[in-house]
Length: 213
Length: 213
Image (cartoon, one colour):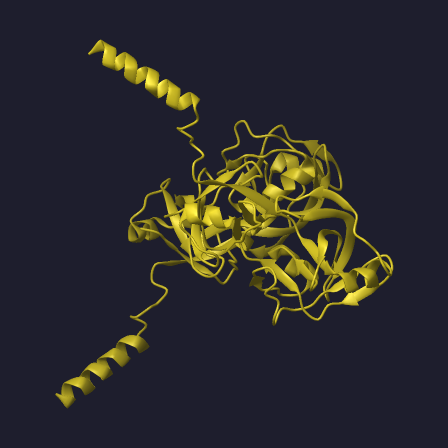
């Protein structure tokens, strides 16, 4: 009997050392966005000059996406916000993602939308060093979503476009509903929220969350 | 048979008109706080001058509580925040309730605490028109809580000090856990959160929430 117990203890130790008892299994890293801007190449050139190219300062977690040195002022009828970061590369349409609190500062009510879903959204004024633009649409509050690869989606048993509820532990914990799965071949696993959503649940860039089954 | 149907319709109409089919039954109004300051009378006099009395501008929903004309600058090692509203009346101890985002601006990490639970909390510098103070404690992020009367507590089948989970509907909905019940003889029913918590769930001062059973 003693031999079996010894054997069991050795097997358990081997399993632990091998990482087979991974507590993080199924947990998802958190990416927190402050307000930011995506620009079309045409709008970039209006704001910064003909032929202008963005200056990368930092790669983001999603492949090919990066933060730029360049910032803009965004302005509405009630106020302006300075130093709003541009993210690269240029896109087919300009899009400005703000916080709910920014709506009060700007005096513009932006809807909660997925990236790229811009029909019927309000515009905003962008002010750059070489020109300014009044966008006719593109001002949104980002809807919470999870980027993942198609393989991740298979592992989590979800599909692109699904809405899931995610669980956050801790004193400021809770759940967020209507979190949209965005699964593509080239996505890195990450739960995307803005700074207000992160702060409300005491999430940081080192937090992990889980999908509630 | 037709007579019974007519009678049933009339009874239903009477019930509706009498408000007996109240959709808001069990729902709780939402009170949203921005960063604010409670001062002791001694600290008030250091900041505004001997014998100074606060100037009420607006009654708050909790009995005897009011917003004041007076504001202060609060400051930490990394930065300052201007025009932080003082709430009256004076309390036994000064307390500064900030947002998670303010911690980054000030360069001070504040814990999530219930009002009055100040042991071990960090201090902050308060700057007023007649003087400034370095508080040795009192800087907190407010823990979400629900004020209610003892009768409300009976109706909701909860007790003072209980922690409940509350449910928020809508596209930006979800749940908040560890919401503390604060039941006293003199409290008005209200779910208290800060602006980041409100914005993360798209709550406004006209929203209603429910306790999850």
